[in-house]
Image (cartoon, rainbow over all chains, first blue to last red; front, side):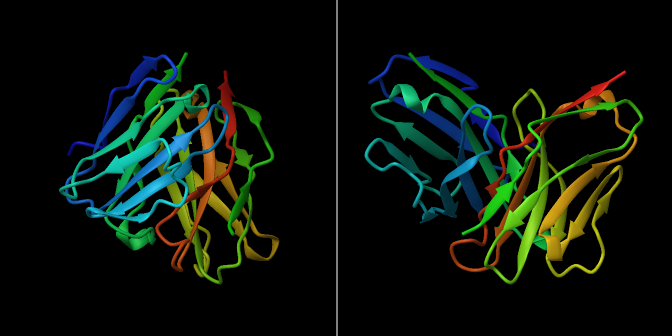
Length: 117
Length: 117
């Protein structure tokens, strides 16, 4: 079974340019997460989807970040315009729903590493 | 609010020896889950082990065990018989069960483990 797929793996852009990251979760996983991981830090939640609904986007900087999961499957995270401080790894994860051990843990993709020059 | 503290930025262990990675937590939720993830250089987060706050016994998964001491709010990871492939970043994380904390992992800053010959 395929895991969580993210693209691109690496992206280098100049500041003020737009960038988009794509994530395809594990088939059948209703819950999708986007996490931000700064260098030397643990991941921090940006947004969580239950199917196509964003149920927790309190940590998403809405002035420049946006996300969508239109059909409740794959998702796109966009930054426009990018700033120097956005350089980080953007991790996508999925789960069956909830975090109780009986329903499964989060499954992460390999991440998209963004460098803003 | 939930908080995870990992006080060991880096640890060294010799191959075949056991190592303990420390994790303390703070939460107001009466029920919660504790997780450990491994992040190799490839970037993806790999689930290792889960402990529910009301589980009577400490969790074990192969060479991984979780030393859960509820009164001390600690959830240390013990890796027995270390292997070279265990070299990676290790993150402790927790989730609650109520709205706002359920289905959301809060991570610590991680511990980098280096296994030596």
